[in-house]
Length: 440
Image (tube, rainbow, N blue to C red):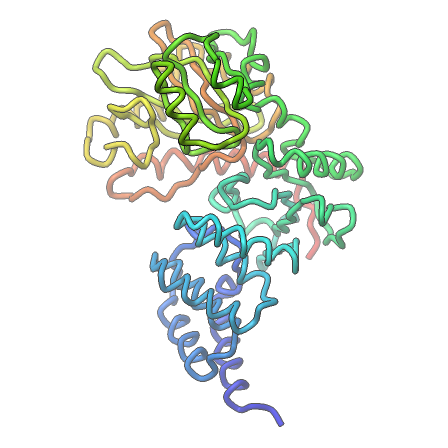
């Protein structure tokens, strides 16, 4: 005999899902989840479902999805934890929980739930009502920030997206895959992902559909390889960079002081420091137990007004787009840590750069197109600076750089006018490569 409360909870949940199918998608990047019209009504239905049957895992997960949209992280975490407690095999809920934990810097918890999710399922699909194409997106079994964060840039209403996580324990060749029109490799460059990158390369070479971001090109953007990759590109400077073992780093003196050092595979400034003396270097190595490090020549890119300016440029099928300018009094520049919100003059300068990047980089078209050709990827971004003669100082290139249009409209209106050009260029690339051939 069926449980009437369980049946009522399912009816309430299905009513909510019928109004908002997106609340049943749990593998998207939490920050990409936005409010939608009628969300309050849907929220009420899901809350009622949870209240009627607290053991109904899909309703808890949907509640987590909704809390994420409201920016209520603690409530979202509690809801997803309730979902996986009610159904330990609910792979998508584990994945949603993993990405939320990653956003709160709980890397241990994020890794645990990510591996639980992938041990149960490696393919996660999102199917809009009338897709124009079907895309197979290859991802490394890493948190969202270590793959190209496509949830912020792909139009999910126009493309059916199948996210496939690739790893030696579940190679793509052994998976039962849906029909797709093209492959988009979202893999970022990581030394510890080399086995995944090789599996992805073998897979794309063995199939016949068009490929965006062939994994073969990732070796060109490894930090220690990038200077050679861009050697000879006009108006482009890449600081000398080397990969060193711990012992080699301890005795390193080739660049002279100061120089930059970070553990291999660290991103987002984690572990990155400027060391100016031998004693500072030894103190740094005592604090970090990594087996290998990346050292780079330090280029003082401070402008005459005392501020450092770091530019992010997105390359789509060889065409450069100015994405943002971060201005900071500190040499380590991260956009979210800069005072861009506080200073109108900074935002005005960023707007000028985004509208007319040639005013900053005189060889804008030729230099950045040449960079794109040398690297070979179809979609990626670079972080760079400008030196007085107008040359580009390239710090980093990767597909796994954050590109979005979520800054407050009232503070950054120009971004909402200019950043969507990148999304449109990517949509055009998909159209050229994958066509409009998908049949529902």
